[in-house]
Amino acid sequence: MVDLFLDRVLIENNWDQDELNTEREIIGILENRIIMLFFASAECEKCLEFVPVLNDFFKRLKDPAYIEYPKLLALIYISLDQSEEKQEKYLKELHKKVLFLAFEDPYRKELQTMFKVKDVPTIVVLRPDGSVLSPNAVQDICRFGCDCFQNWQESAAELIDRNFMNKEDFEEKSMRSFSDPVRRLKYKVEDEKKKKKKKKRKGWGGGGDEGVEADGGADDKEGGGSPW
Image (cartoon, rainbow, N blue to C red):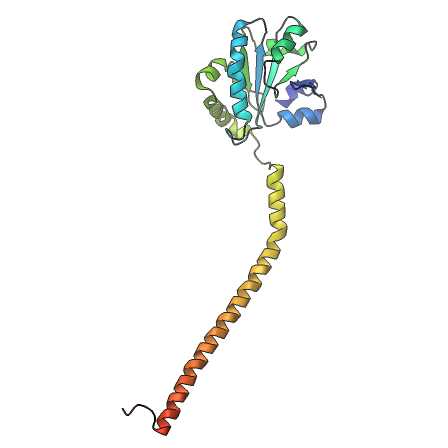
C-alpha cells in the first residue's frame, strides 16, 4: 500500500498545507493503515452532498472515543476537478486530516485509471497490502456509517501489524519495569517485618500462658489454689 505513494508528494489539508515528501514521512502516515482513496469533484452535486457524511464518518473513526486504534485509517482525496481553484474550494469543505495530491500531479489520473473509477463520488478502500477491500464504499458509508469500518478492519486484521505500542504505553511500561525491583524489595522487607512482629506477639502470648501456669503451680504449693 505504501508503495503507491512512496515517490509522490502528499499534502495535508491543514492551514499550512504541509508536504509529506520523504520516504519516512510517507511510511509513517500510511503504513499498516486501511486507506480510503476518495475520488470526487467540486462540480459534482452528489460529491458536495456527500462531504458532511464523509467528514462525520472520518472524524468518528479518528477520535479515540469511538475507535480503539484511531490512527489505522487514512483518507486521501484524489481530485478530478478541472481547475486548481475548484480543487482548493472543495478541500476547504473536507476534514483537516485529509491528505491529497497536488493538482498538477498527473498521478491523479493514473490512479483513476488504475482503479477504474468512472463515477464520482467514489471511495476505493485498500487493505494495508494494497489489495482492494471495497471498489466503492460510498453507499456503505451512507447506509451503515462507522459500522462498516468494523467489517473492513476484520477483513484486514491479519494484515495489520499490531505489534507496536503507543509512546505513553511504552513509557508507562518502562517506568513500571524500572520500579518493579524496588517495589518487590520494599514488599519483601515489609513482609519480613510483619513476620517478626507476628513471632514476637506469639512469643509474648506464649510466655504469658506459661507465666499463668507457673503462678498457678506456686499457688497450689502455697495452698492458695483450688481446693479440688
